[in-house]
Amino acid sequence: MTLEAAFVRLPPVVRAVAPFLDPRAWGAVAYVWLGFPLGLAWFIGLTVGFAAGVPLTLVWVGFLLLFATVVAAWGAEGLERRLAMSLLGARVPERRARAEGRESFRRWFSSVVGGPAFWKGLAFLLLRFPLGLAGWVVSVVAFAISLAFLATPVLVSLEVGEVRIPFRFVDTGIDALPLALAGLVGLIGTFHLHRAMGWAWARLAEVLLGAGGPARTAPAAAPSVPAS
Image 1 (spheres, rainbow, N blue to C red):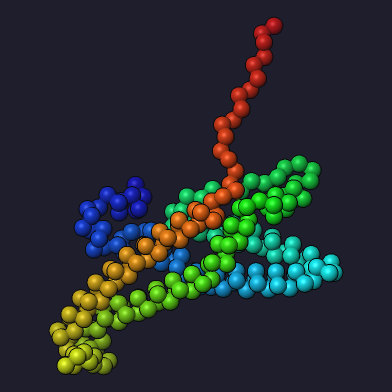
Image 2: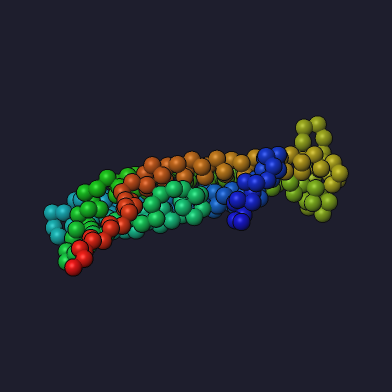
């Protein structure tokens, strides 16, 4: 039994108060935290590649730059598909169709550029930066506030400092326990928030990265040979 299946079999109350036991929650945290660096890399690479390649098509260098950008974007889409499947459980095809034959590379490139799957994936890569940045900021703020409240009794007990709340100072570990409880509730809510963000990213990946996969067909039956 997988950890995810074991979590699903837990009582609903346990799943509600202990979302950090869900492997998908940790996968969503990893996916959200990867959203900012990966989104920034995709945005810079695509912007520079297309912005510089289109004007330079007047000379042959522009075509080489556009070709390199398309190949890099195709590889980035493949990486995003793997991340969405492994971290979020998104249901997208594991493989993309490849052309076969003597002119396989030419057919592959023409099928990539001419098909809608590449352009949908390109839209996903471009959305990865603004949405990934927003999700990363929300994640950092939520974790920072929750963990700060949760660690208040320890910090106060170690005389690292005192905490001021309306109308009073918190200078003992006992007085800080309500703040720790609030931090625990906030941390539980933070994991639920990341599960929701992971669910939204998985659905977006299924829409924009799930097209163009190879169709699964049953193997053709071998032709019968009449008995002589």
